[in-house]
Image 1 (tube, rainbow, N blue to C red):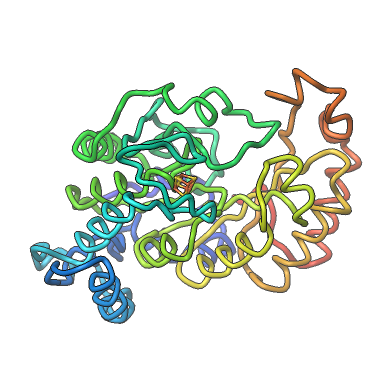
Image 2: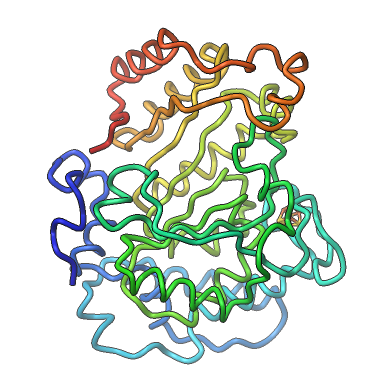
Length: 362
Ligand code: SF4
């Protein structure tokens, strides 16, 4: 049971409470974290990967019907064995043999080789701690229990976490049992949520799902991601993630290709934002890049206003030239400075004119 002061001042804001209804339901012990519901759905795990997907499709309907249960329902029954979450973990484990976790769809056997994300089957965690720099509803007075995985499927030239995103070895090898222990420590230390980030959590899907099968604590699970997941990954996680922290970086594919080396960005990221928005609570993040108002910020805000009304949006001003932009500013002249105040004001005013609820979300 949590003390109200732990939730922070955001909880007093009715707009924020409305946008994050399930998240606060879990935090106030009214609702179960959804991965715990998945653990109460019995399944029989046998057959080929195709058979498991068929079973997953069937059981996902049962899961959808149960996502409205109250916490008592979960607390009054032990996890089934094996269960729907075990099924997800098994599917992810088998997918490693021909990885399609993200839209790169490398289809490599990660037990033998490393994909574009530079990760083989091993996950590594660079750090985990009470993070007080996230959005106010995620931090409260006890912090967000943030776990930084190494490795990333993007190559952002301005990455602020490049030391871990581009160096997959810059962390401790972390198997599911160890990750489960980390989650238990953060939850036991009263962090408000388990914040899965990196780098990028997506290439670590198999470790994350297996770890969750070993935990049964009522804490919201937060997916903090670039949203380049494949449809298969979205099927595996969309019904068990309690709150999404998706990054919407670019308003067009040319900027995504030039600055993050990513193809087909807008199609994939819009699909996954909509999917996640239909399934759970979210705070969308958009980092304003200097000189990218017309091509990125404005189209993104237009799209959010039309497709995800009522969602919280963090319009972030903290861009600074880092990593390759800092090293080779002549190659990226338009983003080799911080955004001007006038650019941020334009972004905020535009969001306001579109009825978007933007930062500070407290
Ligand atoms: S997670 Fe993405 S980038 Fe990494 S191996 Fe799998 S498909 Fe490739």
